[in-house]
Length: 326
Ligand code: FES
Image (cartoon, rainbow, N blue to C red; front, side, top):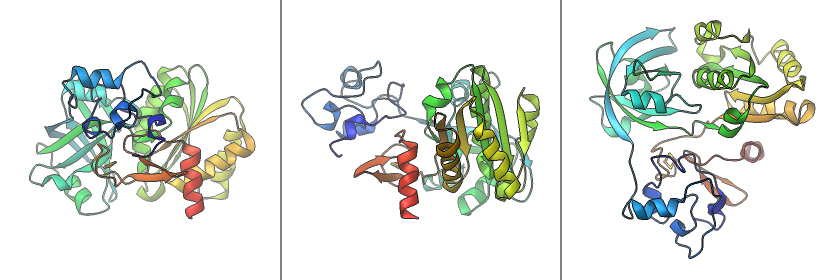
């Protein structure tokens, strides 16, 4: 790894899944000693990863388990989207009730390379269920979407780096938040909204059907005590509404769930009209293993390589890099 790697923020640091395989390989994202260096230099967050590694017998701690999960309910929203309710262990449901949560899912007859990352839309730890929304885009999602009620699928998790800017969503209390959701990215937006409500924030949601042609989280939003507006963000009217809300200086955090173009659009309005507000965004990078091993999610910012399935990247820098590459 490169010389700046010890200053990166790993979403798993300090959790029961830390230290991970990367520590065994001297590739830890956070700990300088577990990068093979002789000195201690990390962004200390209350847990010494090196000490944890020693206590674990110089091995990775718990690894994510793959469980059998029954399809409790299958709802066909339209030709584009299917919502699956899946039975999972109660602890897994609790762990997944966090912004940015996702799991890997595949049919029980499919080999492991069919594993597909899916954002968690809803998690109920008491009932031990999660809900995911599947947009059929290729062979893997087609197989998942074909799962019938009563059938079983494989689920691996929990994973959390489905968004960048966790700290802004978790750390904003008693304030006002704007949540902009478009297309299939509506799904992870539900748990983001819930977290903001729990933190006693006033929440405004802009909802755009996008390519999936349905506002499939509307039933949740109607139950929450929030304002939500259905619009088309690609129209002049949609842009006017978005701009008006961003101009509201009481809004201190914005979450964008959608494409990188949408994130950029919002970032530009923030720069112009409300530069004090924080931005959190959905992580749109290609995720394959989810464990920081395969490198398919890797991006490079200012010469520093980052595996975005684990690292909480600087949103502005990540988007600017995108902009430069066009
Ligand atoms: S998805 Fe494999 S390293 Fe990130």
